[in-house]
Image 1 (cartoon, one colour):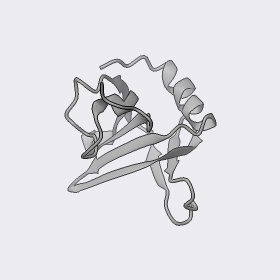
Image 2: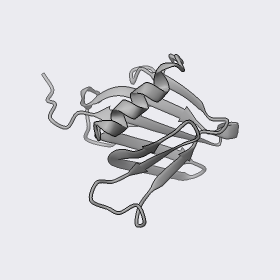
Image 3: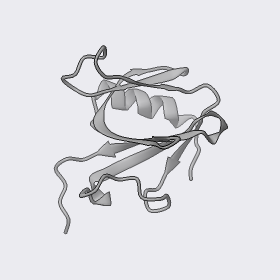
Length: 118
């Protein structure tokens, strides 16, 4: 795990401004969420994740960064979080967010839709 905190804001803002396609994997309690979308809002306090074509009033994931631990991770070093049918080569940079009290984990991974296995 790498935790160079200086590059979190820059990379998150880059993902937002480029409308980068991101894979979201979130676990909290007994619930797991998988979705593909984009960052709609980035600040030091919170992130908003939405799905293109769906209004924020109908679907929005808000991640409160207060007391959260952020780390860049190598997808080879963490438990499998990818959706069924997607090879690891489909994913680029991976950000893991551990929520306050280790109650939940959120992963944002760059998604490269036009990849192929060699």
